[in-house]
Amino acid sequence: MYTHRIQSAEDYHSAVQQSRENPEAFWAAVASNLQWQKPWEKVLNWSFDPYAVHWFEGGKLNITENCLDRHLAERGNHTALLFEPNDPKDRARRISYNELFMEVCRFANVLKRNGVRKGDRVCLYMPMIPALAVATLACARIGAIHSVVFAGFSAQSMADRINDAGCNVVVTADGMSRGAKQLPLKRTVDEALEHCDTVSRVIVYNHLNWQPEMLDGRDVWWHNELEHVDSHCPAEPMDSEDPLFILYTSGSTGKPKGVVHTTGGYATYVDYSFRNVFQVEPNDVYWCTADIGWITGHSYLLYGPLMSGITSLMFEGIPTWPDAGRFWSVIDKHGVTVFYTAPTAIRSLMAAGIDHVLPYNLHSLRVLGSVGEPINEEAWHWYHVHVGKERCPVVDTWWQTETGGIMISALAGVTPSKPAHAGLPLPGIQTVLLNQEGKEIEGNDQEGYLAVKFPWPSMIRTTWGDHERCYQTYFTAYKGYYFTGDGARRDEQGMYRIIGRVDDVINVSGHRFGTAEIENAINLNRSVVESAVVGYPHDIKGQGIYAFVICEQLPERPEYLREEIYETVSTAIGRIAKPDKIQFVSGLPKTRSGKIMRRILRKVAEGDLSNLGDTTTLLDPLIVDEIVAGKV
Ligand code: PRX
Image (cartoon, rainbow, N blue to C red; front, top):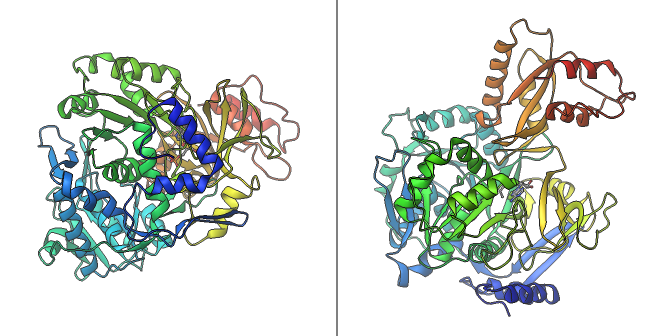
């Protein structure tokens, strides 16, 4: 039976077999690697129609005991978090498991002192500094549900997320540094809270020594609060199915949804997938470059590495500052052994030129990982050759906010890697390809819609406040399956290559947006009548955002209106959602029933004008000529 780590191809195949023959026994064995306060009574209870999945019912645990307490006796002095600040001239910081444990307990007591109780929602809007890890774990310690909002989101986006979740406390910092830029986080929180009435307390971490305005009766300083608490804070006993966190992500509708993950299943799967995919060793210095504001940061910067008791590096800055050698210099400086980043970062560093890599020896590296979007062959090879020196297996990990953990990936050095292919599913993950009618496509060398036919422990449980939406989004397109929204190809060996989204979601530098969400934002501009957004291939970002915009009058100085629209989108969502191209048009290609023919717009945006398909069914076929002529 599966025990700790899959270490050979035979182990892999036997684990796959066990997980199919007796899924409950398989997952029970996996879950028993964790420390439970009370054992579960039933491993799995499930239905995809209607949707309800319960893992390890009756079991009690606290994920922070698994991340912290259980390591203290033997590894208390081992570095848990290794912090590399934005500015390379500032000192890096090592926080041992003992220290992290104490900081988490103290801040958990601060949360309690400020009225946070089990089940309350706490919004975290923070820089990538250890205080964010501490605040996240402190929520989990007392059973509060954390909702981390990526600090690149605007005040309006934050307000929407706070209101949707009904948060009562916000934790933030005065400001943050990213490369040469600094951002006023507290001021953004103040703006957001003008539109929220559930928040009674804002706890502010002093990071940059700015002196933001503090609202009497609402805002308190983190460091002042610490003076009133001790470091004793027992871990709240959590039911396996108690929510651990909400993380908002975009779908094909205009409104982001709060993906809910629960405690026992999430902890089990993240721990299992982390150990196996990266083939973790006790002295690894592991670096995941994702922000904790995304699922990758939750699962594989914070929870996964800490459950394994290893050192997780946390980096405040960006890959290109002070120069495009920063990643490589940090790897050499700290002896990083496992490095996990996004294709968009690899492509931008590749574009910066090999001279930024050559000064570094990168000898410490053992495993390389990629996540968030398809990695093209050129970037894969560059990563493998120039970073991994052809010594390090590259794991291309496919998964989603909704899946909680890595679903399809090589296990480093154990199962095969192939450029631009995520590879084989992890044991226990039953992926299938479906055709248009929702029938399973058998055999290899096939293409279809990627779906999963059996539950796994860290799958989305619900969308916060709207279970029907969760059911409708993931379980109704193909009855009996979890539908991922991705198209994929299975090669002759059964290895999966992800082709990309088949819904109205675009993936820009690994960040997910709904086209409707960006259109709604653009339409807020008072000159705009209507817009349509599509993705197009972008050399660095993977996909770029192309917006077709109808305005009341075609602007005389389009560049002014473009700037205005950038501002509108930045205010509504954040700078990360700014369109790359805006084309002003007098109409959109619509069918007689008023539906926008996005296929045509996508072709124009891609620059593929040779075959626009049948346009005779359009309300106004001439509009296509105008759009083609005006392509930007
Ligand atoms: O389209 C797939 C793409 O990212 C989507 C999930 O986005 P998000 O929930 O933001 O999570 C990103 C980090 C896990 C997927 O539906 N995607 C993610 N990883 C890969 C990928 N596409 C190709 N290859 C990958 N390795």
